[in-house]
Length: 205
Image 1: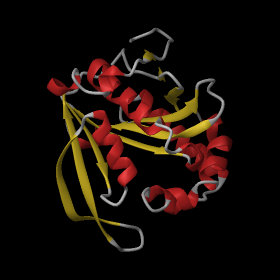
Image 2: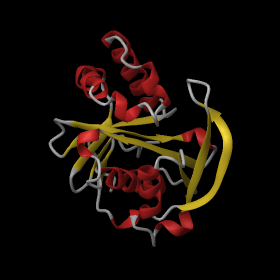
Image 3: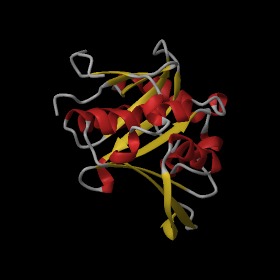
Image 4: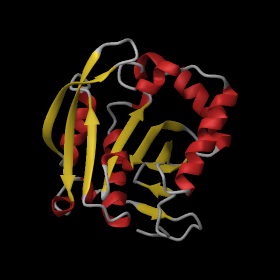
């Protein structure tokens, strides 16, 4: 996939592949946001983790990205200095499809950053990766995440009842939001201007 988007610029943000050297900044950001993240992010229950583990995790993310197995992005401010959150374009929903995941630090919520990031990844999925379907999954209680999917133009297809178990043993429901390639051009996601670049810095969009 020579057109893989390693860096994505939006009007206010930079999304890019994680590097192991981001570990210190990411560790601090996650530690400052644990109460904010734990209700919705299963991985946050494992936090805080030792810095060496975080370095290894980011190394795996980088290896997965380079090998086209999975695509984790850091969300940074426009200068690429401050971590605002994290996101992913995950192929776990089957061939010809991607699942978008995202989280935003508590100090940057309610400013449209999740919507802006989601729009950018939706555009990359359809215009660069050439998929036929993009999904967003969220807990129905996470109304902020559901609003992002709705604002971008995703359709709520179904809610799976008790399909997941949280780390504390609680059954959870999952809302499934879907956008098909045929509906992308008319969506809000398609109207967000982005610039995407491959590993060598060549502009793709």
